[in-house]
Amino acid sequence: MAVPGVASGATLEEIRQRGYMVVATQVDCPPFEYVVSGQLQTTHEPRDVPAGYDNDLLTALRKTAGFAIRQEIVPWPSLLAGVAAGRYDAALTAAVITERDAQTVDFTIPVADATMAYVKRKGDFSIRSVADLAGKTLGVQEAGASLAVLPQLAAQLKTAGGSLGNIVQFTSYAAAYEALVSHRVDAVINNHDSLAQLVSETAGLLELGGRVGARSYAAWAVAKGNRGLRDFLNDYLERQKANGTVRRLQVKYDLTFVELPDRPLLPGGRTVH
Image 1: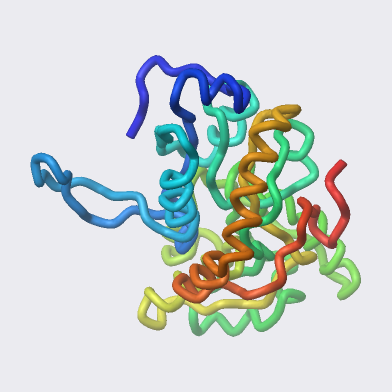
Image 2: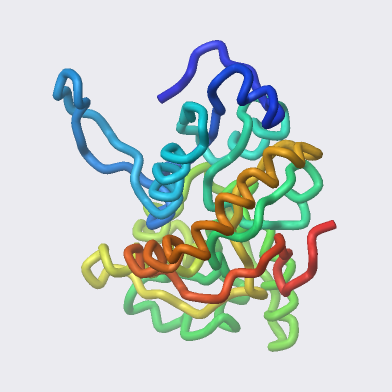
């Protein structure tokens, strides 16, 4: 999926002139983004095909954009940094709107709820609620929203007389879940909908816990100050909300249904400045 030698971060006018946009996505965040087995239409060779909520929205965007869209699959730690550095024109991924990331990229209107929660091993009765995470070893994603939510979790624990324990950062959630199953961490924090799907697919191995921190939203992102491209994507997303596509995809991927705000909001409802 990579486009060798491309360095972009172009404005909407520049994208239209050259005839294509370069977008970055990830594959480590089901049901938003993942891959399924498929085959090339031309040679019928096996390959991994991007799938998920954001990919469906990207597929629909390709039909109306008026220019080609080249997709690069990028590990999460390099994704928003790549947009900020101009390697990609946009991140069409379920990037949670955080105060830290809002300093380096501009977010579109939200595409989904992305409130954090935790998952634990089924049968671990030492963890029955968020308060029981005090002193536990927690797995989070490097440079991700689960890391960013820790101050909120620390505040929650403090009100119950507890405090954060050891924090282990992983470059992928797959590695974090493996560490959970092998008892190297006690719980993993991620967005609620990704954890709900994980639990449903692990045959009783894991158990979904409560939500952590304030309500959060996921959005797409462009380089800071690239207002024309951001507004173009916002217009597209507003049309998908109005024509029912967003609601249909929320049902298809069993996402938490909330009325999505018409502007990017930080956790707890604060407006991004």
